[in-house]
Length: 490
Ligand code: ZN
Ligand code: MN
Image (cartoon, rainbow, N blue to C red):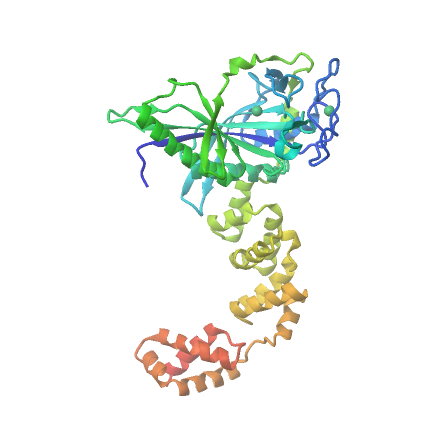
């Protein structure tokens, strides 16, 4: 599909950091408590209260900054972003304005399943800030009422702002998927979108190439209220088309109108105009007088680097080089998360065949987990037990089809591969038994015999079904090879 424009996308992601307590007070951050039970004078901004920085939140943020290959500032400070909203009783949000703790990073994206070529998305900055409360309107609060829940006020958020480097909704989705995976591997956030632990805003406009080689840019629109990565993808696709229609109608270019905020309506599948966005000067940022600036020493930075562990991109490469699997395979495995990778590692080592292990996980284990809505931790067959089965399949004691029957039984009964095979009456077929069987088949199928004799070896495949009927334990590949051998010797 070719369009007369390029879509230019930058994303702003707010991630709730996995701390026990809030950013500037000791209140709990636990989700789901009754409204306004997790507040104190500091987080609701009562006069005379003083904030104290949660060092743990800063350490987690630092890990993300390092993992995103950002430059980490050795000196960083807090600022007040002033605005009024009912869910912000202080009248300002403590954030970071001109000296964020990290900037100028990047994240590598690719999607071997889709059509995304590997690409580095620049990170403009990542800074820490506190969350606001939550307004509960009619539906939750009661007819015609609005109520405020301040439990979330002061929860630590990491705001990660990308460069406008994405050129399609699919690239935006790939970026979000990789970013979330990185954050989950780091263990800095649960990234639960339903509970608001990960929120995405998108900035999007179009570049229209002109005949003289120049480009016209349409006004930038910020899209909010997207509750899933799929919604982000759909909202961006919709918004690109909408902007193109508006441009054809009005000819408005960037700078002709103020930046607009639009909300995504997932039911109606459209974006709706909300307001014209404030400029940052409207917020009257100024340094937070109640908090000391934060310094980061070389030793602290080194410690953050050392605490990262193996990140998804490096893990994929290691699986590919150590176990000989494809980028597609390593992408599927790693994107499932660390527990599944741990399962795979045991399976690959104990079965001695990384490719076979990867195939069985993708075709059998993940399918069952998907059907049951379970995670790998709930999968009934331990990796070493599945490995014992794969060893038998590889050794030709049973074929893949029967292997699946054995696994199905292991899932239900908790038996070992050995016991399940015995219960199903599966045993390796003796060569002498196989020869007798093949001779009977050859005698009963003169047409196939003639075909094989005339050079069409493939015709021998027609004997497999009959062989299986007579003895379910025979290996199709061995039946075929044996029959061809016998026919050619006739
Ligand atoms: Zn508090
Ligand atoms: Mn923010």
